[in-house]
Image 1 (cartoon, helix red, strand yellow):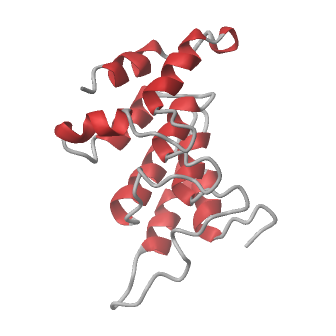
Image 2 (tube, rainbow, N blue to C red):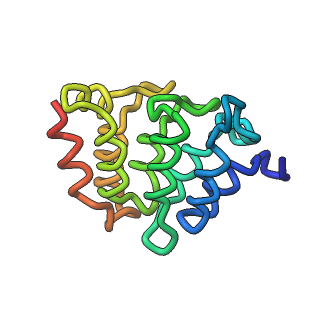
Length: 158
């Protein structure tokens, strides 16, 4: 565990897609043995590897493959909130300075269409939903480049 409280799984998630293959190996159990590192470890910020990858995705350092590996191969639940504010990976992705529709769609495709409304309206501990955060971000003057397609997509999740 490093100074941020990250274990190797979280450090790989922080590094992005260039470490997604390593991450996949770390999450793999062999011969019925558990993985070498605790996949759902929380760091000093109360974040799991999925929270870190979701909040730090950007075009310059993509984490799409990383998030896929964590959800599909690591068994991470995108509705699990962080330890401080209860923000899910979706809350963090929607509220990220580099919010990206591809990341949002990656998360939603793991669920059946009938569950999309629940995801878009899933509250954190402050009762804010990903849809609320997208609405707020789209109206904030400092976030003029917020992708309107994210807000429009979340609005259609009924």
